[in-house]
Amino acid sequence: MKRILAVINWQLEHPEISTTDFFEGPSFSALDALLIDPGPLSDRWTYDLPVEKDGARRTYTDLDRGFGRILAKIFHRRRDEASDLLQKIGGVIVCRLRPRGERLEIVSKEGIEEHIDRYSWLPSVSLVDKQYQLNFPSNARFVPRRGSDVVFEDTGTPFEDYLHQFAGRITYSAIYQDILSTPIKRFATVLARNRVGDVIAVQIPYGEGLLVLLPSVEGISPAEEALALARATTRATVRPGFFSQPDWLPSYPLPGEDSLRDALTGLIARRDKLSEKIEEITQELEETTRYKRMLYTHGRFSVIPAVTDSLRVLGFEVEESGRDLIARCDEGDAIVSVAATDNAAVDLSSYRHLLDHVDRARTSGEGPEKGILVVSASCAIDPKRRPTEFTPQVLRGCKSQGFCLLTTYALYKLVQRVLAPDKKRRPNAEELSDMRKAIVECDGEFRGVS
Image (cartoon, rainbow, N blue to C red; front, side):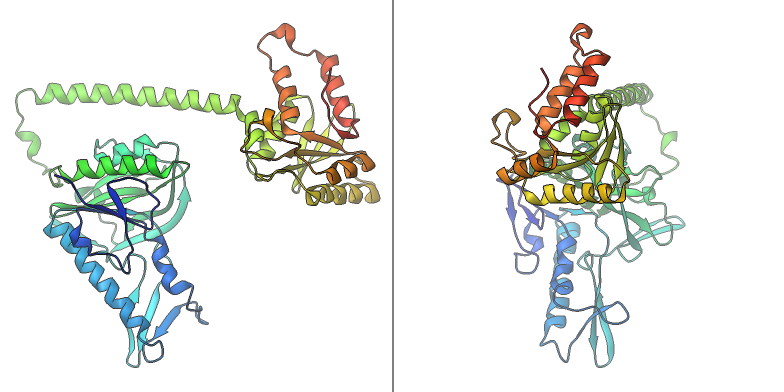
């Protein structure tokens, strides 16, 4: 049986998932599963309504030409439809876990009629277990907190398998908490936490239906993520509903149960050891290949660390100086500025920034008077096939000021020589000194070292 899946505000590419709209799309109850990112929902009021003196956003029903009441009706309707999808149809709603965001106060002459936020469309559910009670979403807090430290709970559920598939790419922007500190695991399945135990992924039962709150994944193509979500959603819709196991259940063992549990425990232990080894090797690989980032990245926190590491391999002592670097060695010191772009060439603005920094060092008498401009343009193109990565004006300026104009590819080739696997082919101390001297004394484009 073909299942009907729809997505709202979430870039997914899959032939079985149709894209729809929260405010004007078809009824949620006409679906089998809904995938939604609630983040953009608050754009409807944050872009149009200013913040008042007390920091709140309000719309006044006697002045807004029906805006507030129409918005409230849409959220009420969607809440009813979501309730039908979950509790009557037994469907699945997959929702990205976001902070609540700025809420909207709908105000009439009698006072505040209603508050609306990104989660106001979620239906209510009340789950009771002995002395505990989970009231969702009324007692739920979606606390802003960012990180990528993910600890899986090993539930074996479809959506945790989805998260495992993208381990290392997960970034959460909010955590789930209960106002009354209700033990969430008595009522729902926690899929993942951060290192301090905050819930960052959880699935909550609505009868036979399932609401799943998931963090974001980054650096994954929409088609790849859509395929993984479609598989997880399909598996989740054919699984039995969630029921917490009572305390007395272990008193009713079945033949073979203990041996299977022991086997499962052993496999989990082996998987954990393998995961640790994978993480160790991954870190070693990232450490080994960190120099290559300067060939294709741009941005202060990507390309500059790679250039810094590369200069240190050549024997420079490197320190930060604002947006730039100071490189020191026996052969001479220099101010290093890094410019990386997806455009065809680095323009004069990068040269002028370096010129200003060097000029301040010259006039103050503090710091190096030599400039090195490290450039990387057309970052998406193979470095061997890139056209000239700087404009003629940049080259003329560097020549006139005695600056070294160094491409990241030229710097990378020097790093390759220094790190050559054959020790006999690696440069000795004198040759390393010649490399540094060639860079420090270069006026204009750096052509390499013979």
